[in-house]
Length: 384
Image (cartoon, rainbow, N blue to C red; front, top):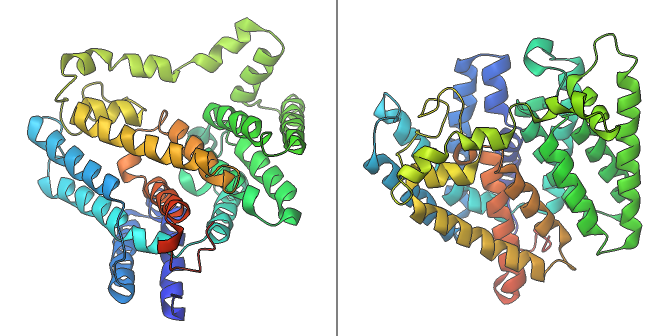
């Protein structure tokens, strides 16, 4: 089944709004009214897409997980709930529309289309440098449309992973561009994930090792360039000190480390390890406000209890096993999962970071096609 021209336009509008984080970007750089308008329009467009094209399936794990998490976390403790209850209801409705309706959008979206959106999204990091840079807010780190360096780094990693199933003439250029733009976020999570993905790619071909050389070459150039800046980039200074063995100056790279942030939440987590502390308790307005837990797994456990966490981990395990089995034919799926799962170790807004939710749904759909090829009737996806 192929989409009509109008449905394709709807799909691209939805993908642009979500994969480029346009409502969030508009909230910071335009105003809250315009941000709300395009945000609610996004969910209206998803429902219209489903109305026109019908329903053909669901990511049941994510639906069950979301319903359980929101139900249990809101019943167990309301201390940190939003002051206006309708705000909480809107969060739930948006999540359900993304998972339920987004399934259909992502079913008709192939890897090349996502790659293009990731490429343009990653280029916004350059825009952050030259067009909408706020030195006091950005601290010499760049994130483009995504407002946070780790989120910007994730987009570069997704694009980097998808490049492995692009035409050969695009592979080296694509991987190099995503590497350079990802390094400009100066995200530790990006660097670690990028290393893992490149090491994993050597299993496909020893030639992929050259990307490690290119990446380290780019980083070295950034370190040299930093020495000539009138105001040096602090993160580059720390990375350079670590590389040269200067432990004194490298200590700053561990400042506000995730280990330290997570440790603040261990006591409330251990106080209620089964039932959790309630919705919002591990966020920026929760128990340890204004610092959130910055870890999705701890947030799910700490707010909703052990049951939603187990369901989510089973879901991830299912995806990892399936993607590992199909690594030779579809290496991008395992790479995307690795990038997303490491990203969740640094992020506590997963349930409202809609592009990451859609990407999990997309991987689920693609794996389903590989494991149930006889049921795959949608040809536009190209099994990739």
